[in-house]
Image (cartoon, rainbow, N blue to C red; front, side, top):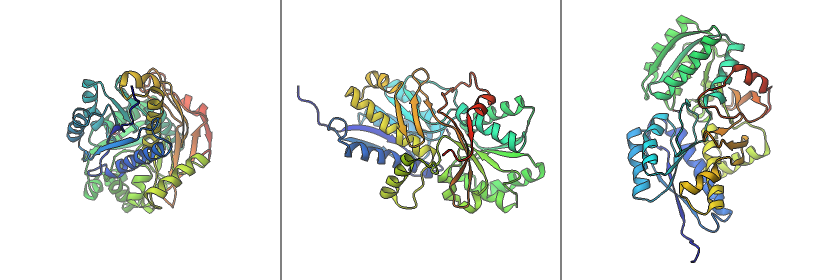
Length: 385
Ligand code: ACM
């Protein structure tokens, strides 16, 4: 039998419209950059990898319809995609029903497992625990929680609330705003923050609303050096959208920042900018989208087929030198070993890295043995990159 030379189609679902289109566009572009690199290096034994991409418009219902279309009409077996947990939850039953595979490159709330999903963004033991420890050590344990109105913020706030309680802290308030909240919606929230004077604010606001929140905070005259906003989702993409002057001084925990000073990262950033423009910024979700596409290609090369039965054993346990450093897919829980970091936005809109773990941290999506002390023993202080 002659070897196939037909292209391998991979489904790609990231939004170019709707509330989270800025960050999702960066994930789309990271995927396309990785595919370009894979094809320039000879593809999968000479077969080109092509993206079949649709715009799900940041809508869980549209994600579900398009995932089904990709599998049933386009014949793809693997989908790279989703930012909001609500959209992943919509795609999950579809990939399970058709025994296809989803690779999900976004930090999320954890407490999930599927045989049909590989999770390449941070689990809560790789960002929430570190952020709680940093904020409580440096600012205090009275936190004001503000989130967008959907599952990730509820669950992430539950985890943060538990950690505050464990350390005799306090959830000063827990507020939710609609996904497309605007400046007016945040004015009242910020006025309440000013009245309550928490030690810090934990934001699980996502997408375009993020900028409205940080701007309302700045306009109220609050000071990030005294009472910063801490987040897991405010990345270089949201900072670029809102402007560095509004974001400067606020804090994010992430497993990747564009400012990581390694040769490998600088080269990845330079390649991205050559293709997508000198102003393009990378971020944690960009990086996971980039390395997961390369890991998929490596698995396709080693097994020569995109059926999940063969692909999964090749992906589980796989290691890859990503822009953040070495990453590895955990063979048991399908999540990824990643290197937690804490960053503070500087005047140029980049993150100054304040702390980084000394080595990749095993994913523990169910927070079985999380402990804030674990992280403190693993960090190295200041500019590790
Ligand atoms: C998220 O919804 N996982 C950011």
